[in-house]
Amino acid sequence: MVLADILHKKELDRNDLIALLCITDPDELQALYDAAYAVKAANVGRVVYYRGLIEFSNRCIKNCRYCGIRRDNEEVERFDTARDDILAMARWSYDNHYGSLTLQSGERQDREFIEYIEALVRDIKQLSGGKLGITLCVGEQTEDTYRRWFAAGAHRYLLRIETSNPSLYATLHPQDGHHRWAVRKQCLDALRAVGYQVGTGDMIGLPGQTAADLADDILFYRDMDIDMIGMGPYVVHHHTPVGVDVMLRGLDSDQEKLRRLQLGLKMIAVTRIFLPDVNIASTTALQALHPLGRELGLKAGANVLMPIVTVPKFRSQYLLYDNKPCVDERPEQCKDCLSARVASVGDTVGLGQWGDSPHFSHKRERQG
Image 1 (tube, rainbow, N blue to C red):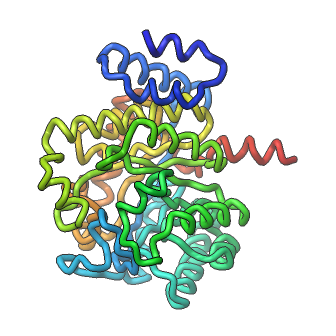
Image 2: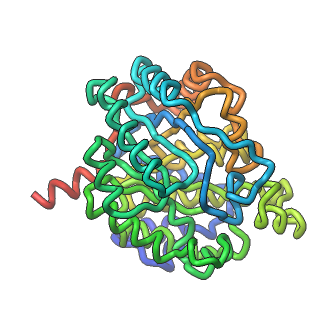
């Protein structure tokens, strides 16, 4: 049994990670998920932390070739959520004991946007008496900008590397000088230098991606000292260059979607085993490929969920990929649904808690 032999090792190497990611036998797969869940229970607990997700704008200066809100997608009706509506949703999250928020939008780097985020973070901290944790997911910025937002009260930042392979990264982005892998990595370095809990992640099952690429992604998380990981299977958006190519090549069949789902679950499990004390999200992309995708992610070792609290009228306009779940639900429905999903796994919800990454805490303790 490949799994049993590997898990007896004190330290796993790249070949071990590749071998685990290549498991296909159903019994071994279940054993892998069970082993990862046991590591989760022992290191981060059987508690799931919420990050209430407010997608407040779909305006974006970037033109990523896989993303539904890319700059050149003229099908998208652009929106900006009114400040009062964002604060109302933040208040709702606080009143409903969500410990943290994630503020997410398309990417902008102009002064107006930078100042807007800074003031918004301050307002959210004030309305919650400092009790709501804040994660930002608003793209590549300068270190000075990251410092301003950190000083305002944001303490976690999610910036997906998408892939640790620069050549594969280049296939996902236009070659115009504004979508460079090296800049992405520099931003992660800057976030760590500022003091954020740093989150990143990859897309799983991309065209041309190998098991070795995915193993290297996990090693990248380790080498970058990442605190939290938000990764999920690639899901097609029909009006993007990558999505059109995938569909034309017949790579979006039900069988292919199942393969990407399984890869996504294996990545959660192997990452949990390799990096026991990081936070790992069970993403909505899993549910886009399977009705119980997020529960399966929790069972494979994830410990974070991101219930959507985007203003309902804008949910259908923030579609990074097709078949995004929960776009027709109100925040109250999403809350009740996720609570039932968590309970079905046997975990509990860490209501009213920030749910900081144990890895980050352990790192701070080592630093004195």
